[in-house]
Image (cartoon, rainbow, N blue to C red):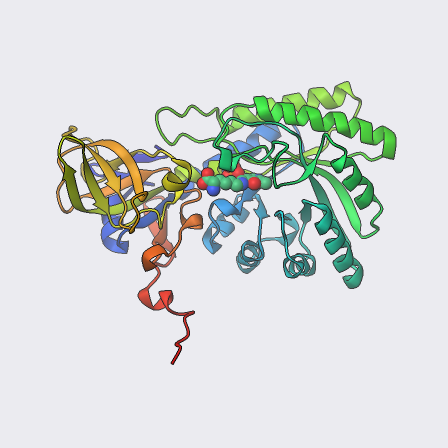
Length: 431
Ligand code: LLP
């Protein structure tokens, strides 16, 4: 998985660094990212656009994993950045990310967040609803600022993924409905705001998607509207943002197409449709999160207690759980794992990996075949780079794990492990 390998000690390695050494040096649980892998994915996405000579922005959806070092890496790779909150924007600004390449998303951006965005000189705000149009209009006119905007539309397309991460269907909290006139009304409204530069449209149909059918259909619906709006309002979109959502391979059952292929198919369709309707080809923006960092990351855990339920199953607990990876509990997400100190040893038993939180649902993996288990074993769970650290929490007052980047055989601590002191740092005594 990702770019892990087995080294000459027989241990699992990532980015040519021994995972057992990493666990010893930085402790567990530990998130580890292979930087070369992230770079390669970023380049793959960009290459697909270059090969088809389509102007683009590939924005890293920082909700997947936001930290100063990660934002710096995105900048180094020439990516743009998608942020969805004041906190993500703040992180990006602190990391020195060029603000003109930041896009601001969200279905309930606050006045304060929008003010911060406008003051920072942000590249683009993706407007989600009528409330936001009014709020942003007032802020811009008060500050006498001009701002680039995209309108987020909901094309009414159902993607095949988990219900909670579906976003493009009609009954969604996001965006202006494309089919019932809402999007058109929004467009009319924003075209009349003198402080807005309306760049174009945005849609995102969901996450962890394996096939292009959904996005192609969404593109078709949007481009048909674009034709209609060109004729009716002389409005021609210069940007079409088709969102993120490219799937990755968490387990053997997952069969995603490559980012390169996904983007290539998308571009061919958009080119065909715009030509058909004699529309000028807009810049195409995308915003992958998971596919840039998901399979670049692993989590290392120390194994601990176990419990046998005779004739039913054996539970093996690790020193983390739903506090550092809530995805199994939230989406029944599946993961693969190995014992990092003996990844190739022959299978001895099937165990279920439990977390240490006081919650029966805190199970990371059901029915995982493993070799004989010893106290000192380190469990490596694959593909935890997206929505792991970023959705981590302090349930049971577990400190959030550290994050390490590895590249060319070198490891760098990029997020410190939380301490107990950190856990109480915002608490105020009653007496
Ligand atoms: N753009 C928009 C507007 C989005 O809503 C999202 C994800 C992305 C881009 C990036 O999607 P990606 O390429 O990462 O799939 N916590 C969930 C995923 C929620 C995704 C929310 N939006 C998970 O752990 O699977």
